[in-house]
Structure formats: structure tokens, C-alpha cells
Length: 303
Image 1 (cartoon, rainbow, N blue to C red):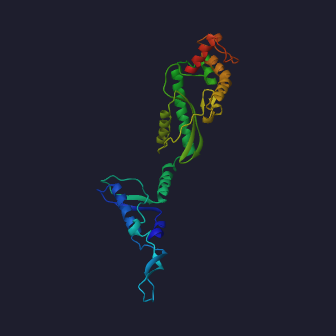
Image 2: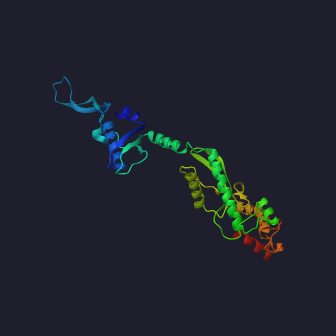
Image 3: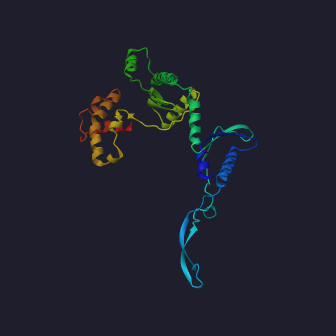
């Protein structure tokens, strides 16, 4: 059969798996049988090449040997020289069965492995809609907002607490688990979706676990393929230095540009604990050697 037979093997098919047979053994057996069939065909006619062979001249009675141009087959690609033409096939497995189970087992060959993945992805996500995802995200955000109020130790009945809640200034007073202040879906194209999460006290492990739990709520499976932080405090992607900018001059410029915002954030967050005179003002110079300014900056770097 050769290449012509291989071109007709890309696709899906089903086999019956008997009990007592491991799925790996079944896959290897199918691959072996297919390779036997592909290699059993008649090898192609070898190409001819011209060789100068030593021998007597035709039609001459003389015994003197001469070089004669002769057409001989080229055996470079013959199976007896280079081995069988096909030694491996890509075979994908559908929903697996354990050793004692029996029944239908779907296999994919060649490009069929991709078709197998697409078919199961469509089956797993066809019931997942944007509305269902948004509803689950709203529930997650609501539960975390309640937890944020609990860890802040604030009484929302007071006017001060109410104003802080409106301005989004409520923060946990002590150590707390990951708290989500906002979560929304930016892109939805099943089986993939992109989430924007605003949170505090998070770890990448907890964020990946969050995606897994969202999948369970949607009665399917979800795996976080990538995590990217787009903001940390007032620092954003626009102010982040690229790898080619990690040098003395660019870092000095970045520190100088961020100084006013750093000072403003320190004054805002530490005003209740420290005298505001000890904090650097928005116009504070980084060349200042005052001990109070150094203290304020060290506290900022520690957070």
C-alpha cells in the first residue's frame, strides 16, 4: 500500500475492547497491524543508474576486459537495505477503559488525533455559555466581598465604614486568605476564556485553583494555561521595564518617575499610623538624606 494507503488512514474509528486487555496493549497491537499492512505492499521499482562495469566486449573474441556502461538498479531505498518504510504511527486514544472493562473504544490516526481532541472539547463545553460563566463569577465576587468585610473588622453601619466601602478602601486588618475584589470575563470563545481578576493576598497556585473550581461549577473541566499580572498597586504593564531595559540608566529613570506616586501611596496608607511630616511629599527629592524620608521609603519597600 505504501504512501497511498497512509493518506487514507487520517481519521477516527472505533474498536471493540475485550475484557482483560489493557488499552495500551490494544493501541500497540493496532499500530503493529497497521504498520504490517503498510509495509506489506510491493516495494516501488528501484531507480536505474549507469555503472561502468569491467567485462569482455560484446561480439568480440578477445579476452581483454574493458569498461562498459551498464544500467543497474539502485538498491539504496530497498527495504532489505534501509529497513521497512513505516516504523511509527501517531495513534490517539479516546475515553479510556480499564483492564476489566469492555466495549467501544475510539481511536484516531494521524490528523484524526486532532479531530478526537476537538470532538471531545466540543462535547465538554457545548453546554457552557457566557451567561452561566458570568453568573458564577458574580457569585464568587459576592462571597469574597462578604469575606473582605469580615476580615476588615469594620461595622458597616457606621458612616465612616460606609464611605470607605463606596470608595473601595476596605482592606483586611490582619492576615487573610486570597480575597477577590473584582472578577470578570474579557474573552469567551469555548473551550477557551480569559478572566480579569482583581485580588489581594493571592498566590498563583490559588488563582489556578480558582479556574479549576469555576470549571467544576460549570459541570466541566477547566485548566489555567497562563497567569499574567497586569497591575501591582499603581504599577502597571506600561510602567514595567522590559528585559532589554534592565540597566542602570533605565532603572534610575523608572525610580525617579515613580517617586511621586510612591510618596502619595505611603502618605495615604500610613497617615493614620505615622505623623505625615515623616512621609515623603509628592515633590520629595530622591537625593534627600533626611532620616525621616529614609524611614518612609523603607516602609514602602517592605510592603
